[in-house]
Length: 107
Image 1: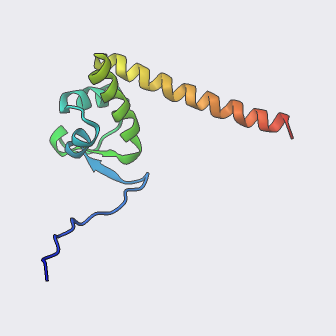
Image 2: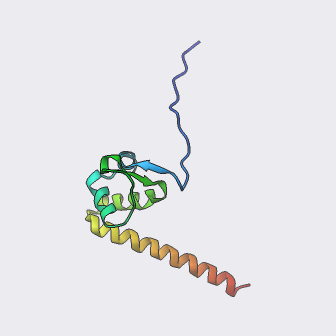
């Protein structure tokens, strides 16, 4: 009988979970200095003694992925990417509020 390849141990991450910054860099295609600067700018929070040991919330992966794409694909600097991420989130929140208000008006 052929040998079955080993399956890596995996689990789904929830919104309350934290992920290592090195894994974030790999998943979001973003480099460590950019993540450090995004943390310094307050775009994401971290915990840990040093950047190599940092953990970031899984909930912030969207922010890091968008920032990484803006920097990589459009050549935006870290500060510009941070501003764009904040504006995109604010726009999304406003759109959600408008939908809620429209539902209330149409009831």
